[in-house]
Length: 233
Image 1 (cartoon, rainbow, N blue to C red):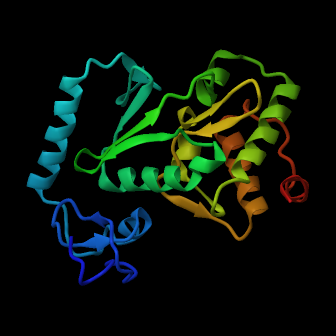
Image 2 (image 1 turned 30 degrees about the vertical axis):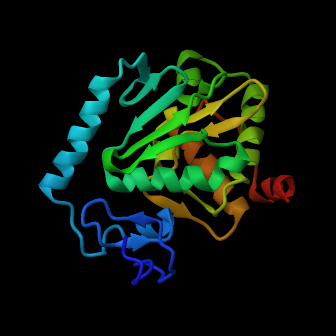
């Protein structure tokens, strides 16, 4: 760790994260590491990517995983833990930043450990939740009161987001959103392209609009922004 130069992104001293490829670039946080990922001058080499893949495969072979989680070969379950093997460093950092920022709000899985040299995030298994996409795929019709209950729960959960933005993954893959009978929502991921808005109510309104467009049966009539604002203020 280079203690003389400080964080490459903001200049803060006492850096705690280092680039796994060059071992020179230091950062004070995952956010700063993500912010400079594409322009800190250290482009991924084939040897670096091969090393990541080899480490991931070694972990695959070492554990006898019980089953795929969400039907994905890169998200696997073992005992009471879920192992997410990321495809890119950006995906790895985006997911960690989102999880670390929202642990206290109870809307993301709790991190058990992270392994930088394998782009691996291990979280505690969240039990008692139904994946949004699977739920509505099985149901030909959804009662209106269920749609209203889900819309309210989504609004309350989205209001806890630290920034007025959400990731493309949250809309593009409904397997990344789970809910339970108590109206609690869990976001398993929030990465990829970010949609940012001027206010929390605007962000939530647009999220719900895109979600309804993606899967019309999930939600009924979308509440207007003024109604959403009254609920979250």
